[in-house]
Amino acid sequence: MAEMSVELVAVERPVWSGHATSLFAETTVGELGILPGHTPLLGELVEGGIVKITTTDNEVVTAAVFGGFLSVTGDRVSVLAEAAELADEIDVQAARDALTRSGDDPDAASARARATARLKATGENG
Image (cartoon, rainbow, N blue to C red; front, top):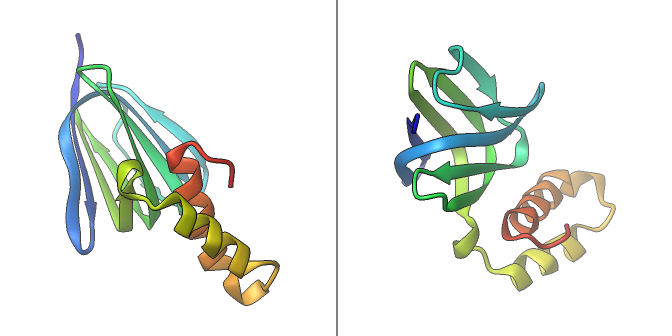
């Protein structure tokens, strides 16, 4: 089975690292799917997107990410996010409350994007 080394790192902490068979990320140019042996690339992550990693054990690790970059070189993928939270670390009710508080206020676009990403990472509708 082909695999690649993946690191998901946020500014304040390492979030996840290990071996994977695929990675999905939302970038400013669209959604990217990465498999082992992918062509080298550098992509900018969207504010309030998600990253899904399928491990070599066929588990799916999902994280809400808030800005940053994705780098693919050889069989190594680095996700360097400004901030990131694994789905199992997210308080769903707090994310729902934050989404409600942000309402339609144009000044709250970043808060709304973060709350939506948190809910999407957990499988909730945002």
